[in-house]
Length: 290
Image (tube, rainbow, N blue to C red; front, side):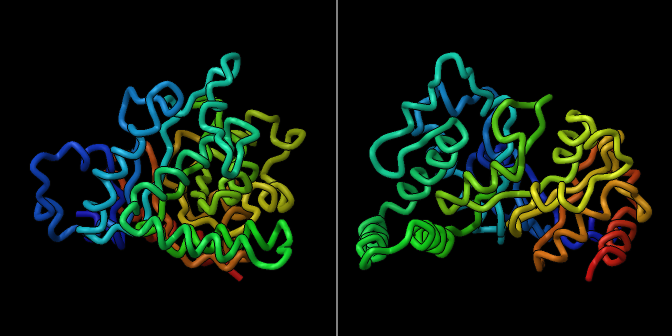
């Protein structure tokens, strides 16, 4: 049905996939599933549940994602990552290696640690590679962090890319630009979600009441190319039209960054009403590409 409407692939629920027992990849036969969302199970808290819970979900989802050709796993989970800052529970995730300085950095550290443990059979080699990098002669701070990013990204498959959300859903990772930089410290890429970014822009007063975001705003929110993109209209979280007023700057920024990845519609529009939405989205992207 999705292909008949002009879509190239589908993005499905990771949590739903994780609960399928026994696992049967033939259930997805004929579907071009290239991305997963809803990674964190309902009711889970990354702060009060042990870190092993995140790892256990990764152990269920990642092999199955690989079986059906998934490229990227998006981590949203507004309620699951909501943090009670009065308790500072993020500090329990801040041991000696790459110490955390905030709840956002602890979230990145959680993913980084789960990633290392997920690949435990190759952990020794990864650590050797990393130590070879870290013991280079007087590397600069930026060179050191760049090597971390390169090492993690080269081993991560599929890519895990948390998305910035908005303050009506969570209180952690609501400024996508800042969140992207924090994740990058641990070598974790990010998902740029246009709806959440615009929702925060709206909450903050639209840069003094502007009709559309400025180029500077998009530069701050998309500091470097994301690993994945979600898009929806600000009004009603609907599928965008080719003449949408708020999204051109988003796609111009992605074009300037050289983004060549996937763009998923994550909308409230009923699927039965999405006929033509793929073509309208393509027209919007193409008219705002360099």
